[in-house]
Length: 193
Length: 400
Image 1 (cartoon, helix red, strand yellow):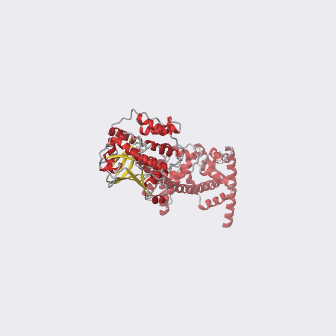
Image 2: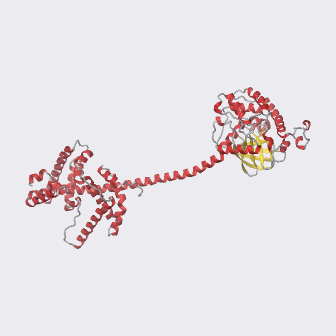
Image 3: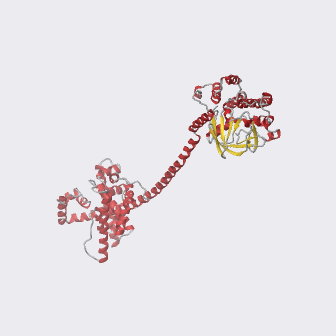
């Protein structure tokens, strides 16, 4: 299964910049064993290792697309560092939950940490709202807010004329989403009343 | 920093995406402490952006899983391709030694070796004989002459006879009549006797000065044993006339089927195909001929026999067609299997579809044999040595 042709670290980074999404699976397969070994040694399961590695790859994807990313170590070392931080945060969280410790939730220093501030209900609400707005808006918002692509890349990916169009379209889409969310929240509050 | 600046510059968004500089971050946080509306707006932005990121993360995790599954499937295909490649490599290493063996056994180098062996055996040198190449000969007649020259390189005395022979043009697909066949048979028999006499120096009959032995009383079959192998170098002049006629007819007959598997034997068998019906008619009884169709198949088993002794030789046949241009070039070597080894005879017989055919000794002449080697001359005047010491042997061509 592991007989895939692996690329160099630079090639992986370049492919991420070019929005080659197949690189996601390739990186996973390449570093799967390394992360699995670590997680299993530190009290985790295979599913935990897969989840941790997936999140590490997502962080890599976001960092590279955010611009000014410089890989100062080997890609495996970088990913392993993210995976270790995430796994230790996960262990602390689990430990806090089991011991009813009221200490502050440990937050790792990557952008995805803010999602933890949201409840599942709110996330579901936004998900429903995303299904209401135009698919183009949904894609654009995901590219900008989740994948953290810059305006130039978004313009290329979505075939917009220039970055001004992207900015304008992003503003409109965000407004549309907020309006739908507001309506959804009113609906939810009305039901609760 | 005020609310308008924060709104115009999307500070909430930049804060959530960690894109504020240190100075901007400090000012922004300071403003948040003082501005209730901005904190409320930040919460709204957190809901939208945070949810988008969470949803995006789940979607990307699913995408990673899909990619992994897809690439695992591709990896399986990749492994299968690798298996095929490895199999191809193994096959190559099996076939290559086979080809090397083939060319080392039947290739041109072996033919050269055979020539060298003949020179050693017969004390001849072919260096002084200049043979015309096929590329230099354009017309069919010239090619016939060249082929003839290549086969036997006759002496000056025999060249006159050859020129007469060549001058007798035979039209394509012309069949030899029954009278011609009888005549040819009689001539060939007498010529064979004469040629053997020339080879051995022993007269054909007591009237010619030969010793009246029991063998001579029985005809030419019995005398053949007395011929020494070295006499085979002498040309068979009197048999050339008939040979040339048959050979010319054969060349012009486009229906002649050729076969090739082991290269040399197929060429060897070709040279007899046109003659098979003629010879069969002469030697088989009438009732057998009715049952026997004129097969174009080459002889498979040859039986050299005398009164009470015989040598049965099987020629290895092939299956693939041969180029007609190469057909007249008889092989340097071909494999034979000695089935029985009792003695020598001038009659040559073979089985086609379980029917025994005999060949006129003029067309293939057994010149001599010693205890270990059978020496025979084919129509092309090439002499073949067939070692009889082993069951499976190889006939080697010796140029006259």
